[in-house]
Amino acid sequence: MQDTWNEMEQHIAVCTQCPLSQTRRRPVMGRGDRHADLMLIAEAPGGQEDQQGMPFVGRSGEVLDRLLHDCGLKREEIYITNILKCHPPGNRDPREEEKEACLPYLKYETFLLKPRIIVCLGRVAAQRIISPDFKITRQHGTWIYRNRCALTATYHPSAILRDASKYEIAKADFCAIAKKRAER
Ligand code: URA
Image (tube, rainbow, N blue to C red; front, side, top):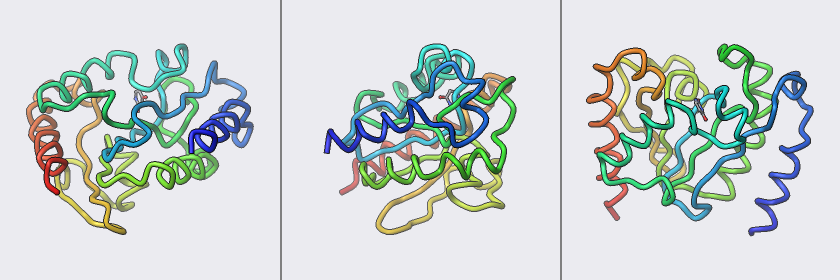
């Protein structure tokens, strides 16, 4: 199994399926426990992530770590990834064709991981993974079930950086996620 993950990473490292391969510094692979039952999916690496090649190492990573800590979750026990593995210049929203080009990697990660719970961080991930008309303000914290996997969404940490009042809302969602995770 380790070999399969490594093979996927080798593909991503040299991927030229979309023009972001020309502007990225490094692709950003998913990180964390490859046996985790909980998978977080965000939209795309930011500038810091592009420099370091790891997801959520910048300011939004600090917010994410606080949320996890406040709900008794540990980064090393979960798996965190993005729809796009490469940074969109200027942090713009991912384009349709970029998402489609990158999606096979996310599908393969999900196939290898087989998570029990998937959490979409933010609108872009929720609309691509849960439903195209997903409204994060109204539907965050709600659950749907697909192939024995529970899916939900909450605010993206960068939305919390823009509006601190969203922290408590996201924290309540994360604590409900931790509770669901403890259910067997
Ligand atoms: N924002 C994202 O969506 N993903 C990261 O990895 C970092 C910031």
